[in-house]
Amino acid sequence: MIERLAIEGYRSIRSLVVDLAPLTVVTGANGSGKSSLYRALRLLADCGEGRVVASLAAAGGLDAVRWAGPERGSRRGGATEGTVRGGPVSLRLGVATDALGYAIDLGLPVAQRSAFDLDPEIKQEHVFAGTDPRPAGVLVERTRGAARVATNGGWSELARGLHPWASVLDEFAGHAEAAELAGARRMLRGWRFHDAMRTDASAPARHPQVATRAARLDHDGANLAAVLQTAIEAGRDREVARAIDDAFPGSRLRLPMVDGRMRVALEQPRLLRPLDAVELSDGTLQYLLLTAALLSAETPGLIVLNEPERSLHAELVPALAERISRAAGETQVVVVTHHASLAEALGGAAGALRIALEKDAGETVVAGREGLLDQPAWRWPKR
Ligand SMILES: Nc1ncnc2c1ncn2[C@@H]1O[C@H](COP(=O)(O)OP(=O)(O)OP(=O)(O)O)[C@@H](O)[C@H]1O
Ligand SMILES: [Mg+2]
Image (tube, rainbow, N blue to C red; front, side):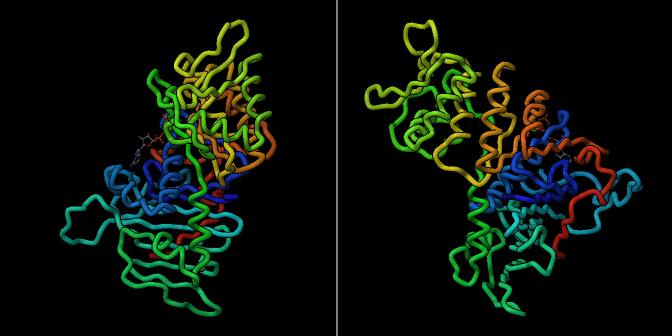
């Protein structure tokens, strides 16, 4: 389970460290930084896929996403200072489970002529034991092109001349000397994100699908029917039936094969035929997509939902909260929402933690924290 998350210099987040619970509900007003936190988690997941540099370039480069305020805090108690940048530009992300952690430091490229100006560089990466990357717990350290592994009482060189866009996780996860790299990559690759799944009239989830087993939902929901059928065949039939009945009493899910393709349909009380996916309301489809994400046959290490209540009618919120709470009993879940009643319903679940974000002098902070001393400990490695 992920215990701690640290973000520095990303969008409205100058410096934020939060502890996560089995179920963490992130709330806050518009513009408080919820999506920034969500996107930071996605960037960390991108590190596990070897595409963090490409993702940042696609977002406009480091200049477009880095914290635009002063380096030092202007938080309560501290005077605004340091409006002129002293240190190097740095975007840092880190995550720690009870066993293993990963931290990355990205910066601007050193001056050189290149057409790839938007590409940031990986300056440092650390894989560590413990809840933050303090020196004593470092297992693998990458500084610019060089990577080394901690051995009994010393270091052993792993690589030299690593490209500034290549993650050590990607390059050396197969290396026998550094099993921790594979562990860190596996952790990051086990995260699933669900954000703004399409429910419009021509949404992929409304189309008939190739019938092939699917243990996880595609980003666009295109394999909805297959994911639900796979979950049912994996023994989750009662849970699926219950999810449907909770939200639409008396209704039953049907996954008929038509012309060799699988479809989603809902049998509803008083209707003479099941309604096909193309006929379902946006909210109904959204609920089915979320059910599939939360009940899929494969249990991911972490599920992150961004504003799952979008296009959901208020009546469906309790059923959604129930699905999320149940999923949190099997795996770790983070929900980002500004829906008060969803946050309320989830906040009361066992093992739930609520993190309320707010803006303070342009900076995202956790409501109720007096200052940096209230943050969980996180010591970034020196560049
Ligand atoms: N580079 C940056 N530096 C400082 N602030 C930024 C930067 N980029 C975006 N912001 C600000 O960060 C704030 C947080 O945006 P974010 O999208 O995370 O909010 P949110 O909590 O998801 O809001 P909503 O509920 O509207 O989706 C916005 O007010 C935005 O203006
Ligand atoms: Mg948002």
